Amino acid sequence: MSSTATATATPIQEVEDLLKRLQSNKHVQSVIILNEKGQTIKSTLDDVPTKKYSEIINKMVNQTRGHIADIEEGNELTFLRVRTKKYEIIVHPENGYILVVFQNPDK
Amino acid sequence: ERRKAAKARDLSEEQRKKILASVDFVEFVDHSTRLVGRVLSDDYDFMKDYSITQVDDND
Image (tube, rainbow over all chains, first blue to last red; front, side):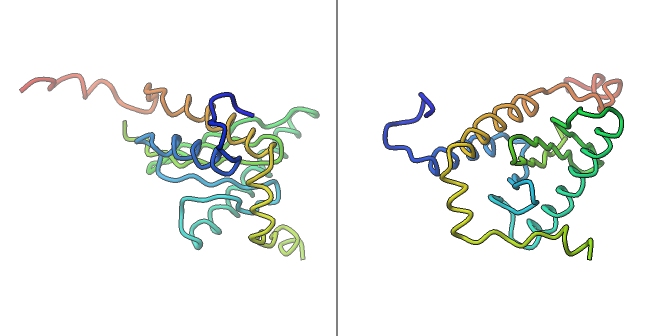
């Protein structure tokens, strides 16, 4: 479907390539992709931290969604950035999936 | 029991493979990684204290 992909690239390969490109950014520490239920689809971390972060991030997203809807009915969360002393968490929920990137803020 | 409901079970390997191969998932990854890529490449750090770093540039 992507015009840049080679004729033989499968969707799975395309996803791998896109994630590899994202991870090649020197600030990226780890990447997790969840579905709307908080179930992990893809992760660059080990199973234990993946499960832990997936649950917590999913909770954060759902809570933030609720707060946004409370502020204005019909409005929706589209992007979430959380800066901490150690790293930044970048969350992009869209179409039933959630991309989570942990970024090292040392620039 | 609310806690239980919130905790979804892990995806089976079969379910995971099905999602990974689906067109809407590829589209999501394509779009969201581009978007986040733009966020990452934005080198301006609003939390950084620029008043100190300017001083000892050359030694």
